[in-house]
Image (cartoon, rainbow over the protein chains, first blue to last red):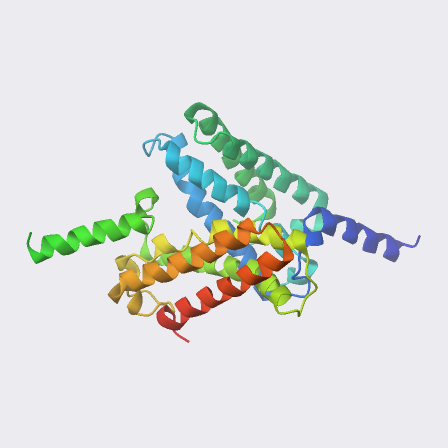
Length: 151
Length: 151
């Protein structure tokens, strides 16, 4: 197998792992993909922010809001990744070259985040479990941004 | 009850109905609220677009994608509305003054959309039921945009 073919295969396998298999937008314009993935991040912030405030004791704990937001966050945590196609590499965004240079590490960071969010959603608002999970979600956000997003 | 007090009560009741009761972002900056509600609309488009293409026979029907996208759309269909606060009235956006002048009609349009999305999600990808529901969702999108969004 020559090098070119090998790298094409790696791209296909990584693509499937990152959710491309279900992406009916394979032909979507790069600027649209960037807008969509940024929209998912914006909404993750909307629903994670208040939970983070509660975990840090800055906002009174509200089990109903945490259960609702955690459910939203679970759906949102699956949405950005198919927007990081090679075609978006040169679009203006805060995504660092590492997104495309280190796909396995990027995928690992996504998985860490999603696993933490699944745990948070499973807590269904229970204060002790949710607060622990919120902390883990926050660390996963930070770790991914540290390596893959410009300051 | 004087007129001023009455209208304050109406605002409270409408606010609660529109999801403000669960909104920990009551003090959020207007431009952030606009960005967040637009992000929800962007993602509704991302996940509704392919389903609409399938219902119109432009894209081959895929039950797995429809079930997944319908689930996402159900969460997303709840997200924009608490971003239409009075404080955002003068922000640059395509929202028409009718959003604030006719809150009951605006709420009705949201409810119609959300009910159609709930039906679509309940179809769990079943082709006949999903295709009917996709048509209803599309009409609900269009009706709300017609009255409440600038062309």
